[in-house]
Length: 151
Image (cartoon, rainbow, N blue to C red; front, side, top):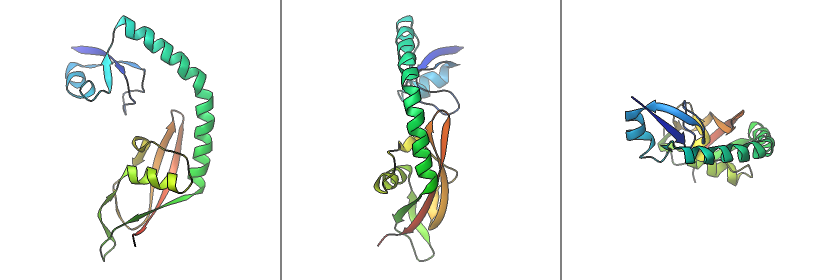
């Protein structure tokens, strides 16, 4: 069986907020709905989606320009993150995406949602690392990270 849902948040490999998707019952019941990532589809909710889509279309041009400006800043700057490390250069823990979002903001960069930062693998050592940031549906920016020892 399948269930028709409206996404309330972006879900990787499924869709963006406002999309109507059809998924298996278990995925809807056990994952999407309890985490408030989606709500059940109804005719009234469909009208609401249409209004949200119209508003999104109006704002898309402004947000695309802002995303391209943010991408230019991220591509031309290296973000420095201070972390506690052992003698061999391995961190005690890992650098989280929220740490990265705060570091970008502290460096004078654009405000980034931590959920939009994608790390290929966890940052658990000192040195240079790279990540990507999905700023807009059509704009993805590289993020260079330099992890140093916290004093």
